[in-house]
Image (cartoon, rainbow, N blue to C red; front, side, top):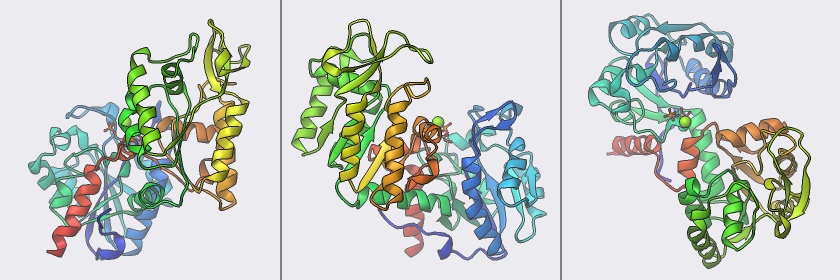
Length: 405
Ligand code: 3PG
Ligand code: MG
């Protein structure tokens, strides 16, 4: 991965720093239900405060389609942001560009923080408009990007703006990139990828890329049903993609060619309906009843994945292994998550996980803080697992190169 600058490489004393954050957090009835993204921004804000910068936080929130919409205002995040940064005051600007933004930013003294209204209230943001980026650039002297989870969007505050001001990665961006690089670019081997989720079709690019990168690939969740079916197994009424049989066989052939060992479920927890606490049975994969659905991995599969984890030095995990939202079908995912946590604690495994459902299932297992790194990114994490260049990372890398010339 090419180099980008970090907070250590830029002088921000007395300067106004435009800090691109991802405050696109889940909110229900005006209350933030998961503040992880806000809390993880604190390190960067504290570092900038310590260096005597004036800090202007900007973010998108939801998808307001380029016009102001109170339902997507960032104002409700002023309080949670203030709390996350040790109770410091956070000023709020009702527009992210123009006179209102200039007035609020102009009133900041070194060490003070302002939050700008939703960037996506302007069409220029998603259009990566140079004019909109220039209007943002007018507000500050330096650009810091701490929004890894939005790095897959080539939007003005992520791409065009990074090319207009001296630019650097914030601490969260740096931590995400360090963890992801350690897991896939120069990992300790063997590397195990644990991939779950519903569909092979949505993770085709990911599977193709990862097969070339890892030593072992364990697949579970409904997407494993599609692969089992392609191998001639009967999966009863389980969720699966019958039209993906040929593609699935190609994936398995590619894995064989690349010396990537594929672990598929050998047994499963099945039921005839999906509801909390329904009657379940554990069966061999060869014996899934016609009227039943596979809803979780079984004991033998948990043990096989566990043994693979014991032998691995690095783990990349995306996707739950069963229908974890509906107990008892969370048991397989939870058992594996606990094993990952134990091995990581013991210093035997470097574990990196990401994706919305994955993070939720780790939280359910109570081990979120026990993995080496849990990414706050959803889409960006997936695109990185597909081997794609993320526009937000590319912009920082280009900016660093430009400054060397
Ligand atoms: C996310 O939550 O994945 C990021 O904030 C990006 O949001 P978007 O999918 O609306 O671009
Ligand atoms: Mg999203």
